[in-house]
Image 1 (cartoon, one colour):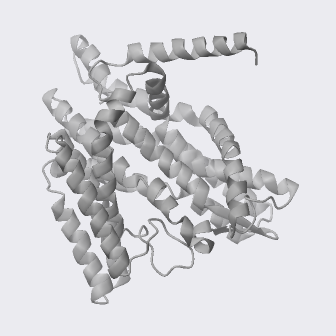
Image 2 (image 1 turned 60 degrees about the vertical axis):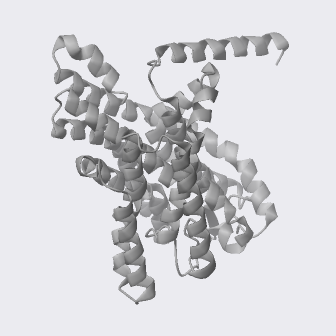
Amino acid sequence: MTDLGLRGVRRTVHRGAGRIATATPPGRDRAVDALRAAAVLGVVLGHWLVTALVSDGRTLRTASPLQHMPWLTPVSWVFQTLAVFFLVGGHVATRGYTSARARGVPYRQWLTGRLTRLFTPVAAVLTLWTVTALALLLSGAEFGTVRTLVKLALAPLWFLVVFAGLTAATPLLTRLNPLWPLAVVLHVDLLRFGLGGPAWLGWVNVAAGWTVPYTLGAAWTRGELERPRAGWVLLGTGAAATAALIAWAGYPASMVGVPGEGMSNLDPPTLAVVTFGLAQCGLALLLRERLRHVLRAPVAWAAVALVNLSAMTVFLWHQTALMATTATGLLAGRLPGLHTVPDGLGWVGARLLWLPVFALALTVCWAAFRSFERRGDRARGSRVVRAHRPSDRAAAAKARHV
């Protein structure tokens, strides 16, 4: 591309970024959006890096490079960012609920708007994969392969169910001390691992474990985590507790599940993944001011804003993008980094080269299905507007972004 063409591209980018910056309300906390975007992109990149679909004849099975190369475990520390998402979710939901109460919006209407925005994009995923699974089975595909694909595609939905439950419980959680759900997680693990209790007890931690960062988000809304000391305490104690649990209590070092390991920190959540989440939340809180400074630049803010506008679409379809690339690649045979066993540096190098292809496939999914996310936003917005007098509609429109 010529220098003239590059200058034209830069001018176009800066004009678009300027329009986005101008349309942003002056009081918006851009650090919140940056943390949400980082959490979503962390999950996406984490899945793309540690999820392998190995081709064995006509069958596809899942594998993980963490199983064959344990020294890659720190990858799971960087890209397992769910605690940050729940931290931001608790902060935004608590702030939104408080604002709704101040405007006289009933709880039922507020919750309906939240859940509509959350689940409207899910309908497209469920419809497409129901049709795809039936078509694959009717065409003679191996049942094991179809099950693997559907499980990977729909795995992100468990997170939405938990998040929806916590959103519904927001009025009860706005004042809950995070130490209470943390104590529940501790006692569940003591019963499971220390006293030989039943395995099903671990599923209590699906709710209790993610309530910890969610209620930290509520404490953030109340202004209790504004001082840097709060972030340092969470980071230090969370990191120290996690290290101790791994070193002396037998918890796995990986913060995601690894095939072949008898215990997973994430399925269901353990005390180790919750204390690790405390450290992540502490780091996120410490980064807020720096993020606010960086996001004063229109281009940086525009990038974050665009990710947030389609965060649900990106989250729901990233596994489909991975599998679509894998399935299409099979037409050319078993390709390194895509269909081969993840057991060496060669696989790692090849997988890194596939990441732009996954991103391109995700862009196609985004273009095809982003309208569902916008539909959820419009439905929520219309309910908010109807709840107010015409003179209040400007305030209601602004409230949609809370």
